[in-house]
Amino acid sequence: MRERYYLIREDILPEAVLKTLQVKQLLASGNVKTVHEAVEQIGLSRSAFYKYKDGIHLLNQLERDQIVTVSLDLEHRSGILSQMLALVASFGGNVLTINQSIPLQGVANVVISVETSRLTEELDDLLGKLRGVPGVKKVQIVGQG
Image (cartoon, rainbow, N blue to C red):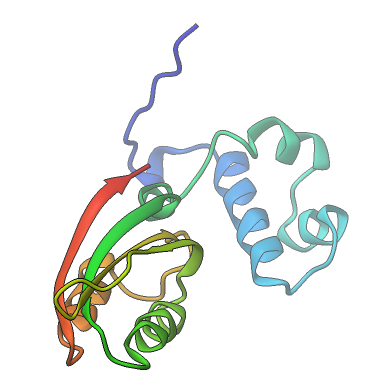
């Protein structure tokens, strides 16, 4: 059976579904340690939480739960790759893989895979900042998933 998704306005959702999302947000924030604490605080039964927990997500969170592969052409200078990685980390990105070529004609290609689910700003903003670093010749998304 194929999953189907709908975009539904918040005010028509049942209270239990909305409260399930509140419980998930409480747990993600770290303000509570257990599902039991969270459902007690929100006023939802544990059975309702477990019934709906895998079916309700914030739309912007679904869009962001992904891995992006970025190709960068960097001048062969000490510290540029380190700057790139620090910039990704400052945006909340988690670098999963790094592949770097040997520099040819003073330019090295670096391909990084970045988990973007915890970005604090938009991916386009991060890419713009990466492009603005001196010594960066090219920044391009080569894959998303």
